[in-house]
Length: 403
Image (cartoon, rainbow, N blue to C red; front, side, top):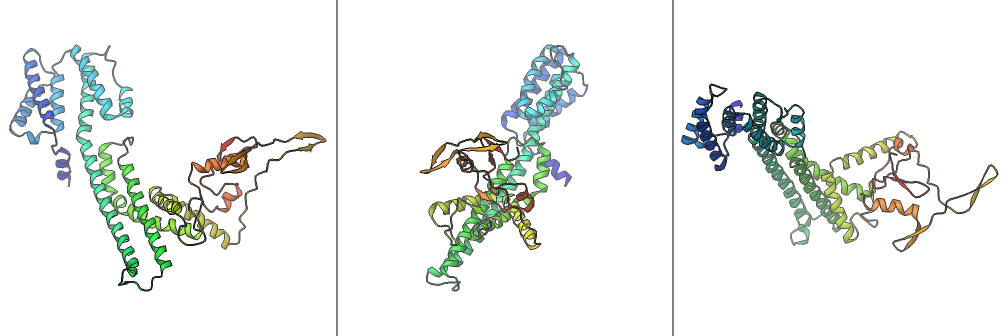
């Protein structure tokens, strides 16, 4: 296994330009060598070995060979050339390693304007090794991501195929030779929408996994990324689409049963979405159920906590109603204190107050799904809507629920 990993790590995928760069470094070393004494006595032997490799077997050349040639060349450079080379390699390191790693490197980097030749040479060698390390190791992380992506798409395609077969079996009664004659039109509609929501959730799970795998902001060592994606292959490639299908079914069941409330989907008292916009919203919520992996588990947790509280006989406290703004004045120790009058605002052709309009505006830009509250959450006066995370002060100002 170790030998296979080493061969995988050193597998050459170098472009012709990289081989030309190696030949140029070998020629540059041979040109500088007569007028300089190398700091490392093994440089001559190393350069000869690299020249023989690139001439006789260019397919065996690796990024490490290019790094070795660069290190041999900098052993022959004087201080002026070292400063010039260091500035260029620092720019390459910032591009390849990323700003975070480069910032860490600069905390210990030498001042090129005042450093000695050995310090410049050591700093330059560090930049060269870092750049070629990421050249070599990035291919491993990319290949591991590609393997996970292929497996993920295969599993998702299999799940979608199973859902399609089930839909065909249930729909076959309308094509002359019913395979499931006990299926009524009402049951057929429920099953088809259940399958459609589940399929949308499978697609959402695939998009979610791919977004995490391809996240360019994820500052992780490439070799660790390879170990992470390879070791977690099963849960990423297999479990995610299967869980997505299950979460899609649960999303439909929770919405149709009323255990999970949403103003986006209207069932009009039936088990299927009523209008075209409701049908589209149901598919979107199915996609979200697979994309936001914690949405359905969190909803089930709250429903289970509420059910346990009901079974145990513990009363569920209700949040206190918000005060209604009104005109007039109240008496405070014999003094007349004027109350705030809220100006009316028209929304959807109806007249309402600004205070009541603000929560509607907040819910328009967030997902309006109401989750059943636990007794503890209700005692704290939390809102059951995931969309309504804003509280309205008496003066009409909106503040977050956490303060």
